[in-house]
Image (tube, rainbow, N blue to C red; front, side):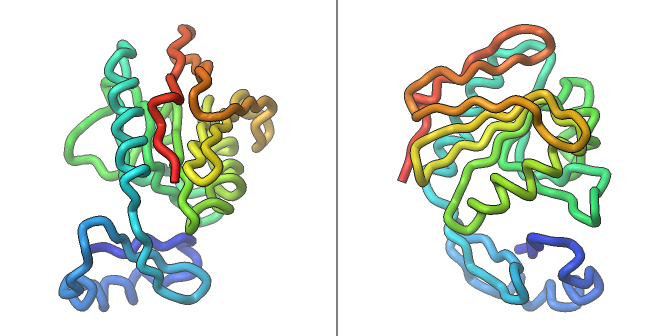
Amino acid sequence: MTISPVDANWIDPGWVSSIQDDLDSFDLPKRMKIRYSNGAFLMVPVTTAHFDNSHALVTWARGIPGVRGVGEFRLVPAIDGYKPEPDFALIVEGAHSPGRSEYEADEVLFIAEIVSTESEQRDYTRKNIHYAKAGIQAYLVVDVLSAEWTLFTEPRDGAYTLSSSGPFGKQIPVEVNGSQYPIDSGEFEHL
């Protein structure tokens, strides 16, 4: 098991490695993660909706030439000491390698975050700002709590200049490499 700090500035990497063996001895259910947030460790459930929505995005990505759907990596370089770990992203095909755990922002075309009660504020604010500053062309928030999606596009000067949103069931208009590849949000699960 690894610690996934919400903010790299809040936790000393030396301290993390010193307690890593202790964390590895915890017997957590497969559907749980440990996060460090606001000075405390939290056990966070990974819901079936999170898994199913990630799977729906992977399936969507298979129909897009020249890209690869990935998740569970760090986006680099760090901005303000922060390297987010997107739930899902489209990367350029040539950048993919099974052994990579970090991808450069210029290798990433699209990012999606699947909201949980623990991540809601971070997904709408901090990650939105980070991805816009990094120049990610499209950022999708899949909100399983409200059964709505929000797509942010056209990053400029550290902010997205356009957004659209809708309920699950409506098509999401996503452009990748100059072509439209709509996502059927009717495939998304909600809580």
